[in-house]
Image (cartoon, rainbow, N blue to C red; front, side, top):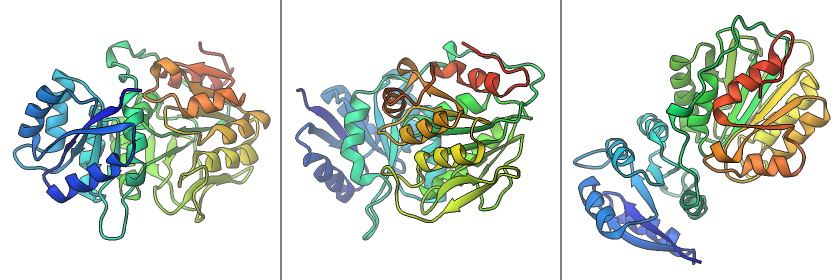
Amino acid sequence: MKRVRVLVVDDSPTMRSIISAMLGRDPDIEIAGHAGDPLEARAAIKALDPDVITLDIEMPNMNGVEFLERLMRLRPMPVIMVSTLTQEGAELTLAALELGAFDCVGKPVGGDSGYGFSDLAEKVKAAAASRPRVSDAVRAPERIADFRSNGRLVAIGASTGGVEALQTVLAEFPENCPPTVVTQHMPASFTRSFAERLNKMCAPEITEAEDGAPVEPGRVYIAPGGDYHLSVTGSGRRVCRLLASGPVSGHRPSVDVLFRSVAEAAGAAAVGALLTGMGRDGAQGLLAMRQAGARTLGQDEDSCVVYGMPRAAWEVGAVERQVPLPRMALAILGLCAAGEREVV
């Protein structure tokens, strides 16, 4: 099998060595070269033609986001952002993910290995095999006019590629959308910024979930990254609960935890949707939702950046119907509308 050739771009020689050592331990990965800034990176891309780039956010001459924007216009290719897990790093990394970066990892600091850094090799290989993101030109701008809810709760899970996928879905939600809870795999320092960015571009009120927050129509709750899992409790008055426990299905927050809680709290009065992402998180939870009578959807293979989580859910029978990303919002809202109707 052809090895994945990686260009490591970082202004720190130490960080370039750390990243190269991490990736070099994987026999399926070859370090094609290094660059200390975007100008060196541009020349290295032309000379080396790498399969994947790891790209620092903050660099001299031009920051990583500016370079990524030019790269995606002129020569689109898989890029993994390497970021400091700070508020400023979060804003820049989210902008990079919106521009089409495959995923992000946190820089190791002191004894902390950094968010996702230990999975860097797996992310690099997944990036090399990933599909190009869906162009805005093929998106269907359809909406359900005069949406009236039938009372269902919506639960959405996503991982790699989920920043753009969630933006695509939630941008189509009306101001009076069904109560919606979301788990997106993301560092702790990123989820609040992500919720704030979504809130500015979407009609519903979108916030980072807080323990005890009532789950209400017109609101979307994003699971905080880091130390907690988001769950939903209560059959009449439902509320968000943040659970402090270890990783589940390899993640914290875990989509499986959220979906299982919704299966128990809402049963048939729920819709679950599993979007693009690496791994299997969410498959068993979505199966629990379907077994409890909920309607369940999975993003289809052609529109996924990584058809991992939706594939796992489809294979265990958790997904009732696979839907292209551009029609996912319409499919969810159709199941949540008064006089429920199937949207295909």
